[in-house]
Amino acid sequence: MKKVIKQLLEKSRFLKSIKVKDQLMILNYHRLADPAKKNLFDDGVFGPDATRFKMEMEWLKKETQIISENELIDILYHKKKMNRVCSMVTFDDGYIDNYNIAYPILKNLSIPAIFFIPTKHIIDRTLGWWDIAAYLVKNTQLTEAHFREKKWDIKNKEIATANLVYELKKMEPSRVEGYLLELSIALEVALPSNEIQGRELMSWEQIKEVSQKGITIGSHTHEHVILSKQTLNDLRFQIKKSKDILEDKLGTIIQSIAYPVGGYDHFDIETKNVSKDLGFKLGFSFLTGVNRFGSIDPYDVKRGTSQPNWSNLDLPLAFPDRIFQPVRNK
Image (tube, rainbow, N blue to C red; front, side, top):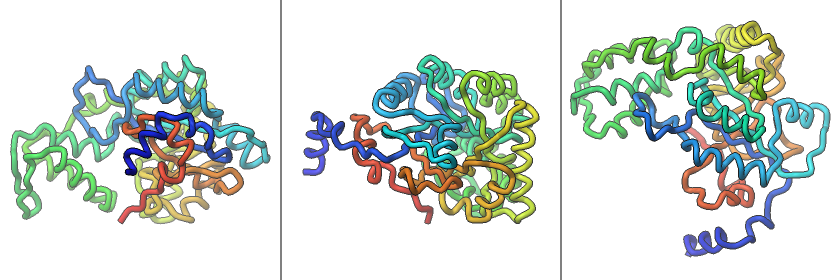
């Protein structure tokens, strides 16, 4: 019965008549898929391909008012009033397809967006641990391995990668590098070179180019660490270091930060206080729901993500609280 009701709704014009008017919906992406290119790294960070992404952006532009970082600051700090459903577009992690695929579409449609950059990854030309873990599993010729005194079944590489990423998310950051080195030995796969990793990331020249052509740049910390697990000194370092580097490289004031991973287990009141103290105006979480004007915390601006099963893109505007339910980590 639920499926029948959903199909009827999708075919009717009823959805357009019941938009929730006071919402700010933020769609966050990491990577855009290129079907013609083999992916050596984590499939889990990929969203739509260029065709689907363009369709989503055209829909946002038609059905909502897409606002910029500065417009959101005006709304939250200067009480600017909005008369339409609003939306924003953000990207995390500084991947090359943000430049090659997303940026031309955003530029052609005159859509503002924020790209959140983890500065050390761009400087060192290295990817995050999730990509390295996926690379090792994808490239091993083994179907099982003995790793840390356990027998590990890796026949299904997708499941093996998902389980590995889940374990690494819970791990102290200082242990991750050693863990991946041991995994490399156990799987008989060399760690990818900086040259291979660097191809997957934007360069400073590309980041500066987009920042001058309608894309706002924000911080994603220096080393993409889980901020709630940091000491106060390390927390300040991760946030300040990234802000200082970005401002030096780009010659502009960095006003926004996106907390890595971004769920409610990954940042806390201390994170928000330090971000505010260091001069940020906005802090973005992830998979945390939809925003309601009048009750937005500037240091917990909620973001969601698009879903491939949105056969009718009006669904998230009509039922935002059901579509963008916050994800709580167990």
